[in-house]
Length: 210
Image 1 (cartoon, one colour):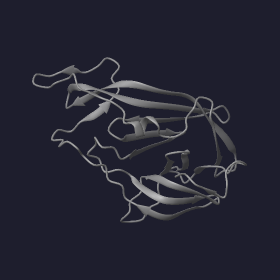
Image 2 (cartoon, one colour):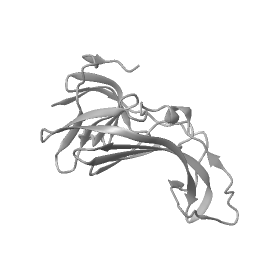
Image 3 (cartoon, one colour):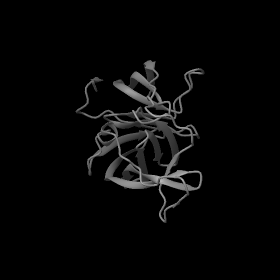
Image 4 (cartoon, one colour):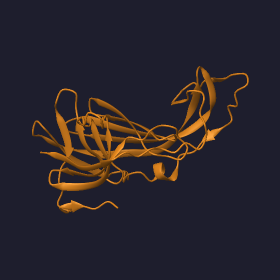
């Protein structure tokens, strides 16, 4: 098992509006309260790029191999769009869409969850690990996660892969590799264990994802 980042580039999200107050998107079951002087009627929609991100049809299986030698399938069990509250400080400042993708493995029992927010933020839970990254959108002031032009994993070259937890300055090992078309390619856990997508019979030597 090996991973080779062949080339990389930084992608920056372009901000169309100036954000002067810290804003977070949170899922509130009971909902926050609007504050005086704050318009809580604004609704942020998911960009088309986020809605179309990845191939997560219900029942789709992603085959992985763990560094301990065992193999397992993560099966997509849901892919839905929900509404969350936008919170400024302690006040509700509107609502926003979030795409929630759920996967599970029956044996060994394991779960994965991908949350794609309207502002480009992505939080991923895979088995015991939690990972955070950002996709480029026209409505966010976040700096998008580094995207590698190509990454080689198990002799397969994947193009345009986001590297979560990667520091360009120190050339660190990414925590998670995310493909816009193939989903989660590889996860490096804090304890040194690794789960990575296995080569399947229908994947060519060079997997072109343009």
